[in-house]
Image (cartoon, rainbow, N blue to C red):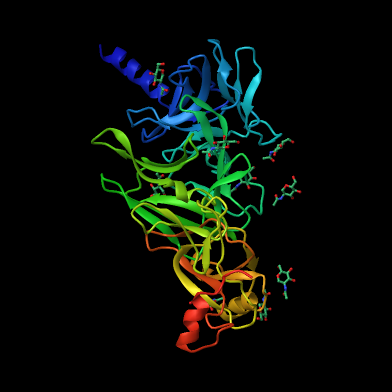
Length: 433
Ligand SMILES: *[C@@H]1O[C@H](CO)[C@@H](O)[C@H](O)[C@H]1NC(C)=O
Ligand SMILES: *[C@@H]1O[C@H](CO)[C@@H](O)[C@H](O)[C@H]1NC(C)=O
Ligand SMILES: *[C@@H]1O[C@H](CO)[C@@H](O)[C@H](O)[C@H]1NC(C)=O
Ligand SMILES: *[C@@H]1O[C@H](CO)[C@@H](O)[C@H](O)[C@H]1NC(C)=O
Ligand SMILES: *[C@@H]1O[C@H](CO)[C@@H](O)[C@H](O)[C@H]1NC(C)=O
Ligand SMILES: *[C@@H]1O[C@H](CO)[C@@H](O)[C@H](O)[C@H]1NC(C)=O
Ligand SMILES: *[C@@H]1O[C@H](CO)[C@@H](O)[C@H](O)[C@H]1NC(C)=O
Ligand SMILES: *[C@@H]1O[C@H](CO)[C@@H](O)[C@H](O)[C@H]1NC(C)=O
Ligand SMILES: *[C@@H]1O[C@H](CO)[C@@H](O)[C@H](O)[C@H]1NC(C)=O
């Protein structure tokens, strides 16, 4: 009995290897299991679409099958014929169908053969192609599908060509790319787009290092942080106990969700989702309107000095009283604001210079200032934003975070510089002329 048992054990060990080499291709039924048994990689068919199969990564230690990465999301293996997932001698991962056609491949363009590379599935959920000297020439973390895992980072600035957009699944059983994508724009913001239309936006970076912290019911704390690597900003998540069972996804509905595995209820707890209310959707309160999230039910309101144009906020708000530029107009400070979209970013300014930049230009409606020194910015720590014209997608945050927005308002005394009696008269003046 002894020798037979040992043989079986060996087979088991073989089936749960964490790496793939040119000598060991991967077929339907085979799996790579990360060293600590946290993630698995293999062929799968979504529940209700057994006709299509894919190569993907899922949690090996969580009973509810949850995919975190899919290689061939837009080119499934169709029908029942098996596919093969191989690492070529030129160090590329390739997925072939039964006829030998390439459905998906990495493109490392290494021309020299026999580098001795291996594809390894790590306990972080990252699939890497690693050279014998330890250099990773490709990693799935740089080619995300719809999920960000702890320690994975999403590039916010797009000054180089690393594409780190998340693209949602088309439906719960369909991993193909949908119209919803999430990524950084060129001005420190994170957006969710519905095709080319913004659907949700996170305010521009404001120098706060740890964006938000969430504590799951089972204990660990997940922090959303911004890291600066050589002048490029990345959004990343860390989990206090180092566990991998928290994830951020772009859901097939277009919502951003943060989830943590609850090992008591054996399900995913959602502890953050955006848009959180209808008023949290991009520009839903119209120009010069804002979403007041300090209310029990978030509601659209007009910024100070503005009134709504129509019965609802579809057209936004207009000034109650025109600005007479330079004639006593001033700025008020709105606290805890999510800064609006469509700003001009003016470099290398002090706070006073930023305020001056806005006040001297009559088209400037608002400004906001932050110091990015916390983000490890060394060259130009200033972040002066000014708005010329409309303010869209503004919010008064319910969580007390957010920053000061300095909004231009007409002179309270302007035409009626005067006594109390006259003031009553002023209030009654037509507000538009
Ligand atoms: C799969 O299909 C069944 C029957 O049509 C349905 O009840 C179930 O909700 C579907 N599952 C998913 C994940 O859509
Ligand atoms: C490899 O070559 C292809 C086609 O020329 C190109 O699209 C791809 O970016 C290259 N990959 C790398 C890692 O340079
Ligand atoms: C994330 O990185 C930290 C530090 O390198 C490590 O301790 C932790 O285990 C990692 N978490 C995951 C899920 O890989
Ligand atoms: C590892 O080997 C590759 C290819 O030979 C080389 O380009 C790279 O610089 C090496 N990395 C280190 C850390 O030695
Ligand atoms: C980005 O891609 C363009 C065109 O392919 C290329 O000209 C440019 O040098 C690339 N930039 C970086 C930083 O790699
Ligand atoms: C996304 O855009 C399409 C039109 O392109 C629209 O029908 C759909 O309702 C939008 N989705 C959301 C969630 O607003
Ligand atoms: C920033 O502005 C100061 C003067 O306000 C100037 O001396 C300095 O050269 C500027 N730095 C850059 C990087 O433009
Ligand atoms: C005010 O700003 C606008 C938009 O940037 C610009 O076109 C205009 O020249 C500026 N006016 C002054 C007086 O600086
Ligand atoms: C930002 O803050 C740091 C530390 O408080 C300070 O040294 C620096 O001068 C500030 N920079 C700007 C542009 O305000």
